[in-house]
Image (cartoon, rainbow, N blue to C red; front, side):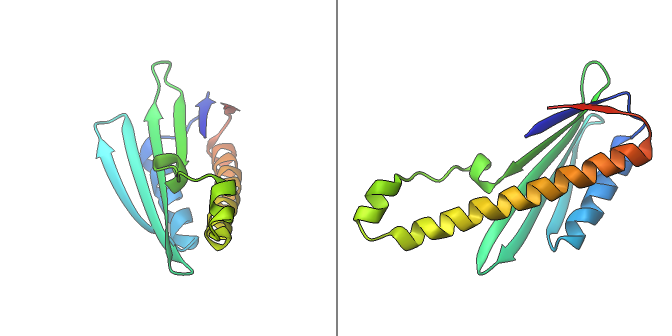
Amino acid sequence: MEKHFYNTRADMETLSKDLINYLHKEGFNVKLKRNGESIYVITAEKIVKGKVKLLMIEILKDKDNSLVINFRNRHELKPPTYSSLIWQFLGGGFLLKGIYEDVEFYQQIEKRFWRMVEELMSAYGESSAHS
């Protein structure tokens, strides 16, 4: 999901540090990569029940000087290919259960992430968000 924040006083450096701190609190190992002055990429990795969970968060300044935050999870970066009927027919329903658990994990973390971003933007000063 991508959101644009207009009329914000947040700078990318402060925002990236706050996002990294948040992801550390969520138990992720985090790396920050800067691509010039206008793009920051945060990658986060966490092992849950023996599975690696991956996130990628991009922060960039748009042409109109708005702040853009793009949240992507492992399934958006590398979507799983499966047909539930075929897997169930072949006795692989337990594999689907794992995929559904992953989807639920990513939905929950993304929901908490955007709630935290809204709180940060509010603390930085006025802004209006648009998806």
